[in-house]
Length: 610
Image 1 (cartoon, rainbow, N blue to C red):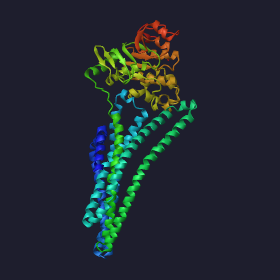
Image 2 (image 1 turned 180 degrees about the vertical axis):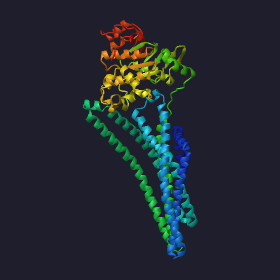
Image 3 (image 1 turned 90 degrees about the vertical axis):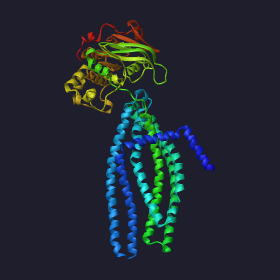
Image 4 (image 1 turned 60 degrees about the horizontal axis):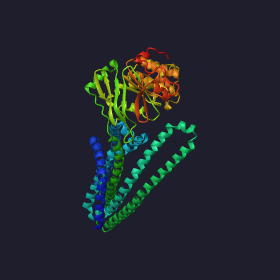
């Protein structure tokens, strides 16, 4: 009684801690995918059950065959041999069909689940998603999703197949020898106790293993992305040591988990072997007493083995399902993040149609910018960028310039105030994922993807012609070096575009934005790797390509602000428009000569060829 009370108390404690509710939600989440693919899973289950039934029939056919031989019953011998061979051949074909069907179902289910989960993750809110390391997300979409897929595919078919084996063996043994059936099931309580022990330990170690695997993927990803820097700074030994330490930790986790598994396996194996010997000895005793035939003894020993193994297999499915629940919980963390809203209203569609003709006005009113629950980057920001203007953002590094661009793109949400866009008499419309079509964004650093240079330029417009790609490259002052490459625009970009200089990468990224031809262009330090003369030409080319475009640029160099209509300073939590004198004070002696001297379209008339 005291053990029952202690067990009830443990269950009550887990309910209070929410662990059972968490486990139930994970099982329901996995069940959603089982329900989604119930038809192929049902077909696979039937094939597995057929295979188990044929296995039982093989054992029963062997009894008839042995009895026919030992009893010199030639009349039954041919029929028994034919039945034995027929069932064996049937098993071969069923196994082949099951293997083929398993592959097809696995691929179908894997693709469906991966696509569904990827769709949920890729549409998650950027700010919420940024709390996770890329390597962690990558492993959750790889290892954890694969664990869930395997469980979805195998749990019900395996369970039903084992139940057929268990039920069939139990019925046959009860009909022929109930006492031997009882002996065969004597190991059941031990299997249940060991399984309960394994469930607790395996769930704990599965969490540790999956978390470590995510960290390992993140480490490898960062290492190879920054391999050039690691070598340049002479840090190869440092990172080799870190990698070696990670491998030692991995070995420790695996050995600890295996220790608990093997302890349980030894106990259940010893008990199972003892039960097997008992069944075999009891069958020999019955045969010696003349109570059963040789064939019946063979059948009963085989059925006893099937009964024990199928019961143990059913019990062992529980730890397997719980390991899948751990992975399901990790995947659920990212699939349940808030999703972006990208609903295109009628007014938005009208704005998209008119934007290139009228241009787009970008406005921020009383905006407070902050990340999660952190301190505000700035408060009460007022900002305006009209069609045909180049508006500059200046300030110390890390104090809000890139944050402002993320607000305009709807990646980051203001803690207070409003960020909006309007087009002629349409608007204002609050920025969101739906308004992102109005923007072309060129972030800091390398943003080139695998493929050719032309593929990268066409990323936003896959149907663009070769002539349009060339015009965009010329507008970004990139055609001069691209045309000299061995394959021109068809030159393949690989290995993080190491063959290209930073300035060349920037100009290809600018060409991509030019070809997209969005009415608002956001440039985040994208001319930092260019010399001053090329920088001026690139900005003038961009403007002349579409005089109604609204251009917002972040920079540190004074030469950029010579092109600007207005400049805003972001510093020490303040966001304010400044004049040339204040800009001179901030930048120092080398200041722009013509801040606010005209619109972007007027500046575009001074176009210089690249």
